[in-house]
Image (cartoon, rainbow, N blue to C red; front, top):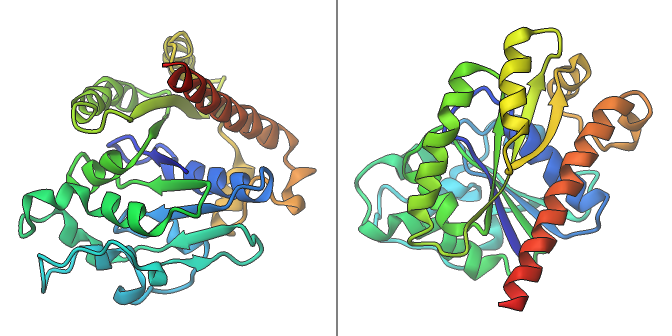
Length: 268
């Protein structure tokens, strides 16, 4: 099982869209049994699969029980369901009560709540994808403590660009506790070749060793996300060839890096 967090610590970079579509791709096109964990109290990833609010007891918010802070779940598959239209994809939904995980009412080991649950419940999956909240708080720490890899989505804009080294510094600190954690790559999202500032920041990012691919700004992707569709759906493949091609290049690049990491680990 490979656990991959999509995280940045900043909102507005398309993190959820990339995480949801990567999970769909792994399940539908690569044949991997995949679990998508919505680890954001805003529940944006959940909304791709569910209309309305998910009951607390059927959501990942259950991992932080404000009424019983010492309750730790290690084996509970009731907070996941099979996605419609993709028999190898499962979803662990979120809801606003997950904000309890950011508060200080839980024991010190609260940064490992998600890891305990994944280790105890998700052993039969090939991939676990975690859509993280846009923050550097306890929920993000939980995700990074539970992950083997982290993908960093960003946009070619000054605030997003400046956030990258801060987030990488956080990752390096987490690596002292989670020695398995590695940065899988930086995905440049919502790129516009017509904007000089975009070209400037994109050039710097593309020169970095961690750069893993670019998705250009696309009205088709905005429409697709609004309609809760997926880049790799058969319905969308012909109509959005450029978007599909860019996404598949990035996805396959990330998978190749996982294989390369596995090779290095096996050799050592």
